[in-house]
Length: 120
Image (tube, rainbow, N blue to C red):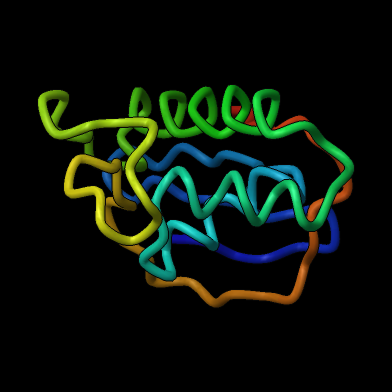
């Protein structure tokens, strides 16, 4: 479950009860993914809303998606299908949110670093 906050968003893993906080940049990336975007779409959105170079944005997006996958908030991508050069919306191997039942909000990215933190 996702709940927007003035500082990004809070995620609840309904399977294990853990809370995670996302800064506005990480929440932006997650919202792109929830809207059906892929890594390339998230990188483009991050670059257009924050002063960040495409390579740094790509590393941050991929790192965030890996973190969210590791903790079970995203379903893993099929490794054989992944290609970083693939166009937005067509890559079948992109990690997808496991499920979203919370609302979405108008928060915008405020910096290049996507960050997720665990809560009790």
